[in-house]
Length: 124
Image 1 (tube, rainbow, N blue to C red):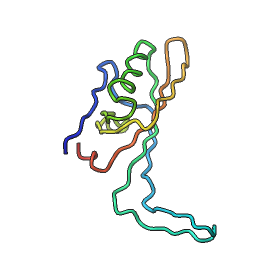
Image 2 (image 1 turned 120 degrees about the vertical axis):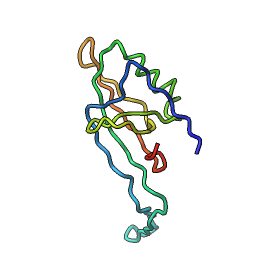
Image 3 (image 1 turned 135 degrees about the horizontal axis):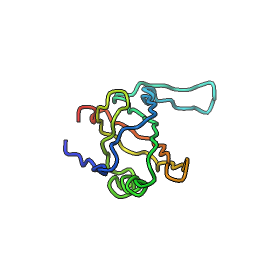
Image 4 (image 1 turned 135 degrees about the vertical axis):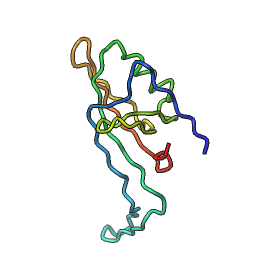
């Protein structure tokens, strides 16, 4: 499998301080005309993993962080490497939405991000 993995700026280590992950549902639900009738079936593909995480950074790396998402990852087209906060292990993940930026103080901001991990990326 040939996969383009976007580089992370050297000024950002890729480790997030908060981390919440959840596998996508393995069941596909189809609503019918009668609300009491819902058809369900098991997915045959492995589930995606959704990660919600955040990191507090100095404002000197603000533009690097924005460029990481907008330029390097092309707004979520290309996956990149991020680090799990519990082990420091790098994994391949893709932004699924634009990071939410909050300035906490004059020189500090928090970036809230949502990533996805495809099953075949877990071995990269």
